[in-house]
Image 1 (tube, one colour):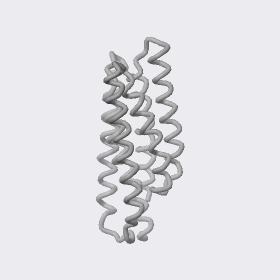
Image 2 (image 1 turned 180 degrees about the horizontal axis):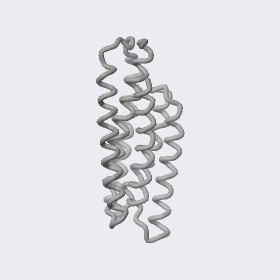
Image 3 (image 1 turned 45 degrees about the vertical axis):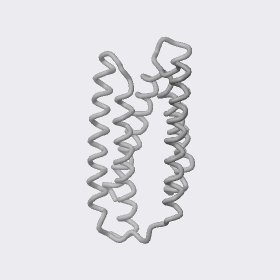
Length: 179
């Protein structure tokens, strides 16, 4: 297997690892009654297993030379993630102060969706833009559900974001395993 193939396998493993972890977190957001609660737990377990498998793929790809690190790209990645956490944290604090805590998951989901757009070129994964669009759509659906219906915004956003991230994590895992 060439260094490029190992590098791609490692990148896909990392994708499965990170997205699986975040899918697990999103599945834990909603407080839901049965049968949805059981489905959320099953989704969380599937996401966690996907993350573990992604970690194994990553670890097995670790030893091969994948070329020098791109420090400028690493800085861009770090700036995007720091901006994401800052925006989500400040926005969540503002919503809490305003008495709109139930919409914090909507804001965080929108910020997560938006952060996929600048990450796509940094990571060299154009498909992240599609994930960004879908994640932002879930945030909008959660907002509308919370404002216009009796359905909790957190249930819509937690379930939707969890499903999207799990699906993408599984896609990454399968690509990483196939190498």
